[in-house]
Amino acid sequence: AQSVTQPDIHITVSEGASLELRCNYSYGATPYLFWYVQSPGQGLQLLLKYFSGDTLVQGIKGFEAEFKRSQSSFNLRKPSVHWSDAAEYFCAVGGSGNTGKLIFGQGTTLQVKP
Amino acid sequence: DTGVSQNPRHKITKRGQNVTFRCDPISEHNRLYWYRQTLGQGPEFLTYFQNEAQLEKSRLLSDRFSAERPKGSFSTLEIQRTEQGDSAMYLCASSPSLEPRYAFFGQGTRLTVV
Image 1: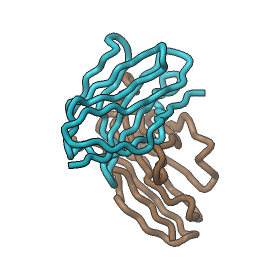
Image 2: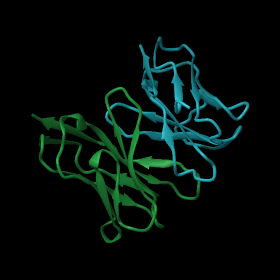
Image 3: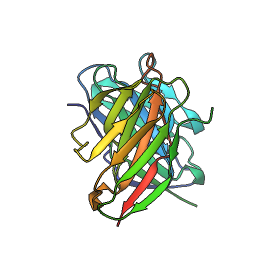
Image 4: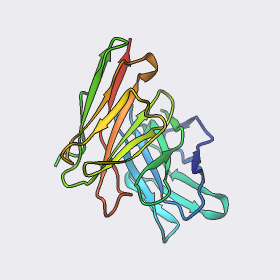
């Protein structure tokens, strides 16, 4: 069965520091991978996605992610974090078939120190 | 087009009461999804529609839950005889059937059962 693991439940970084959020997936075929961000009490906003091709994908708000098939990982990175990046981040994998159904990790809460 | 719209944004209900939520997808998006998100967890898939047809239901969708999309446009999710364990954020998403991977989420409905 497909699954997504985000090993870090909570991460704190200083403003201006670099960020990496980890995501590991379990999927039998070529996965469709996503990162979403959620501010408190809000819905999900898509940061970036990987379907095929270049394994380094660029997203909104200066985020990028790298797909590594050998490690079953899709880690999210940002070179310099802003206070407004504090939020919850979810990695997701597209389910089997072509349903569009998503399987989410449990999320990583990012806190940004001034 | 203002994106996926969900109403109400917040709902407080007494245990045992019935509640109904509404989701208006992005215009011309054939697919509509419902997810549930409990505190500290990632969203979990509940069900999805292709036009008015409900194509898949998760085991999470107990007999007390029913979802409809009668005209293939807006959808409703009803919970009968609510329980405290139903307290969660209920998220709706929509996508075009030709590219179901491009799902857009609404702001969600926060349900609190007291």
